[in-house]
Length: 320
Ligand SMILES: N=CN[C@@H](CCC(=O)O)C(=O)O
Ligand SMILES: [Mn+2]
Ligand SMILES: [Mn+2]
Image 1 (cartoon, rainbow, N blue to C red):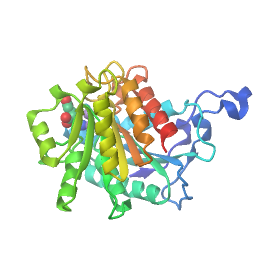
Image 2: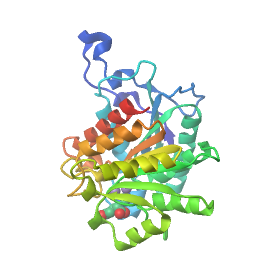
Image 3: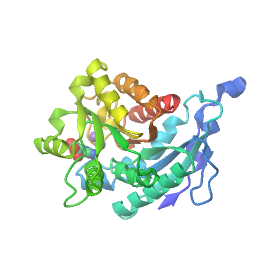
Image 4: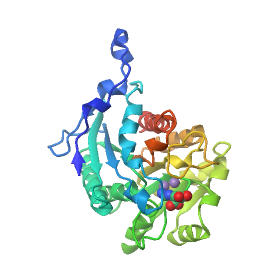
């Protein structure tokens, strides 16, 4: 169910003649074995893979996202090191989903996320289908003090608020979280950015309204970030104490992200997402982040994996 990362995945170009100034991420990432006692994180970044596409299978999608974490690592390997000096990168290995036991794998993911967060790391979970989000949330929840309000921002073409009956899947994580809030009689603070109108049924829009989900349509993000959208995001940021950011790669146009289960013909341009993401990361409220739904078997020349890696790079560079 858990395996520390293999050192062979972090490899890439070496600019030996440039010394420290020529370093890339594969030369500085350190392994972190979560089955042992952890050094204090001091705000360093820890990658944790969730090798799972059981939720995608249950959601009638195209499986292959279980191979996502290693494909993202390979693309991250060649990122240039421009990190603040005191911060380090760690790879905390992978949680695996065995024998279609999705719920067990999500619990395991949650435990590992809790361990990392309580030890002072900034977690970056590498999915996995979007079922990653419910496991991720299980790990965040115990870390929040009673007085702290969690906000969830999901960059996604889809609400992922499907009914959990007959079973949970990659289409249900935010419904599962909404139910958890409802059971506690607390407000569910969820903002979904990049919704494709034609890919979400009237039932999903109705559920979004019922659970109090807010959203911005992809149509309203096609030509940059308007003042209206910026205001909506800033109002949301102002109402919460901690943020969980989830980035489903199918929010991007298929021209940029072909390697996903459900590609979006009218998806977003990467630069629009990056500019919003930078502002959100700079809020000082981001606790943890995931990037999900990469299916390397559907990718084209690592295009989607490289986009995932570039998004993670931008998140790290702008994480305050
Ligand atoms: N993770 C969510 N996936 C989408 C899939 C849509 C599709 O298959 O077209 C959803 O459930 O809405
Ligand atoms: Mn999704
Ligand atoms: Mn999606």
